[in-house]
Structures are given as C-alpha cells and as structure tokens.
Image (tube, rainbow over all chains, first blue to last red; front, side):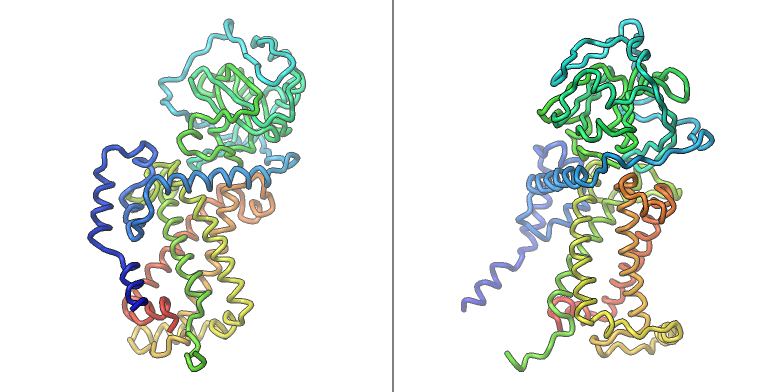
Length: 259
Length: 198
C-alpha cells in the first residue's frame, strides 16, 4: 500500500504543469531579468519540474555567478602578462562598442575636465588632464576581448595604474576600485587586477590623444578583463570596501569579468 | 536480492549520463545565443531554440551548466576508466570493424539484440563524443580564461582559433546527440535500459 501511495505522489500531473507554464508566460508581473533570461525554450526545459519557479532559478544562477567571481579571483595570477602584439597586428578600424550607439558618443570638454579621486586614498585632489599627461607614460599593444565573443588588437598609452594608485596613496588592502563615467556608465574592479602591471590609466590610442569613440579623455585599459570592465570617459575613481556593482553587472553580467 | 541480475548500465553510468545530457542541452542552447552576439560562420541560431533570453542571461546559464558538465563528465570518465568498463565495452576497436558495421547497418543487417554489447560504430561514436567533450571543455576554458591559461591557449592556436574549435566541437556534439536520439527512437528498449539499468 505504502509503495503505491508514494508512486502516485511523484507522478507529474501533465495538465497542471502545462497550466503553470502558460500562467508564467502570461503573468504580467514578471521581473525584467526574468523576462529577458527565460525564453519559451527554458520554460519547456523547466516545465518537467513544477517545483522550480523563476525567482529561484534567477537566484541560483546569480549565486553561481558569484561563485565564479571567487574562482576567477583565485585563478588570477597578478604577475602573468597578457600577450602583446606587433604594430602590424593592430585591428583597423578598431570596433566601437558601448551601451549606446556611435552617434551618441559623449563629448567631454578637455579644459573643464577634472578626475575626482576619493575613498580610501591619502591624496583626494582632483586631477586636470595636463597633470595626468605629465605623469610617466607607457604603452601596450594587447587584445581586447568583448563578452560578445569578438576580439580586437589595439594600442593604448597612459599611466601605469598601480603607479597612479601609489601616487595618490590608495589603501591597497581595499577590496574594490569603482569608476564613474561621463556617459553615465559605471563599473568596479578588484584590487589585484587594479595593481596588475598591464592595467593602464589610458590617455592615448594608437599614439594619438584618446579619441571620443575610445573614451576621451581617459579610460581604464585592462587586457586581463573583458571589454565591459574597461570603462571609458572616467570622471571619478573611488577606493572602497563597499561593493560598487556596475552598469552591466547589475543586470546580470559576471562581476569579475576576467580573461 | 542475490539472484537479481547485474544491470547492463550501472547506477553511476545512468546518473552521469542524464546529468551530462542535461548539461549539454543547457550549454548548447545558451551557447547558441552567446554565439549569436558575434557570429563568425555566417549563420545565426533561431532565438526560439536558445536559452537565456539575452546575452547576460545566456552567459549565466552557460557558466553555471559548465560546472555540471565538468563534475558529471569527470565522474563519468573516472568511473568508466577505473571500473574497467571503458576497456571492456569500447575496446578493441578497429577502423575495419567500424566500416564493416557501417556497411551492415546501411543494409539494415546490423543486429542490436544484446544491449550489453556495443557494435563497432557505437564504440567509435561514444569514444568520439568523449574526446569531443574534452575538447569542448578545453576550448571553453581558453575562451573563459585566455590570459590565465597561456599554455592551453597557445595549444589551441590562440583566442580566436579557440572560438572556432569550440564551435566545431559543439557541432560534433549536437550531431552526435541528434543521431543518438534517432537511434534510441529506433531501438526504444535502449531508453529503458538507460533508465532502469536493464
């Protein structure tokens, strides 16, 4: 008797499952992330299992993404350099990519520009573009890898970011460096990546002052991270232990975004 | 209990088989949507057969299911190798035997009466898909961590080459899965065997 009862309990009511799936397709109050992340394909995948609701799927996926942040931090070798290339291998033209179109590129006024540096730093003065250009400069020809899959080789020049952080007396035990940009973009990175020798406070592209499409007047270039972690038009840098998130990261992109 | 016959497929095999299958379905469907963001072979996948809704969602699925495939795939390979099943079921294998069985199959003369014994075509296909899964994981690692894994990256010819390797290995895996499902439809008993063990 007992065995029979159990087998009836675990048998799946096909109609109930279908109704549940149809209800969730029609339901108007689904959250943005779910509308975007759960297509009909995934619903049919999940519908065999009525106990899985969409909120717990989202929650589980985001937890794995945070676990992947930790794995990437553990894998990250602070001394390992990304490959560098010859001038001849530079991708021309270098692709433009942002959360907006190329016709909406922000124009930042060079004269009025001030880079704000705040948070866990000793020197909180704001930097003019001339002051940044007076610092020792270096350049690199490296591969930029986009989360979309494509990659392109470019030549960036500017100030070694670890040197800059040392100059402003940044607390290197802090967890995060956050960036706010003139195009309302924002993102944040981990301290070990900030101190990586190829992380560059970038002021030039291909030997010329950084063009607006590449993030004038200043961007952060990291060949150890995916493109969306490399903010353009940076206006403010802050050193913090409070997780700052990011424009894409808050919508579901992986935070570490390492390469 | 003592006279219960030994199952054709031990429990670890059935478990890892279905977990691997689930991981492969999720990885393929989400992977197609990731590929669509920047296609390189002049084709894109219909969104209706993809998983994730948008690039960020597809990546969340892909980079979660990769752990399932890694864990379950490794468990499968280890159990297979250590139990001796890999050798007893898949070897010996010769090119000539595969050709002969292919010829027999094309004439409808390939017998399939003993589910405990794989014919040469099955052996070749299952071994191929094992190697292909390893290649998928290695090329996927290069796409995920191309800077951190320089040796693997250079072995696969660099980041851009690894994208193509990953895609072609996916195509092999999906082709295998389609043929596999058709074969199961032709011999439905094999589905029961993979569920019940006998």
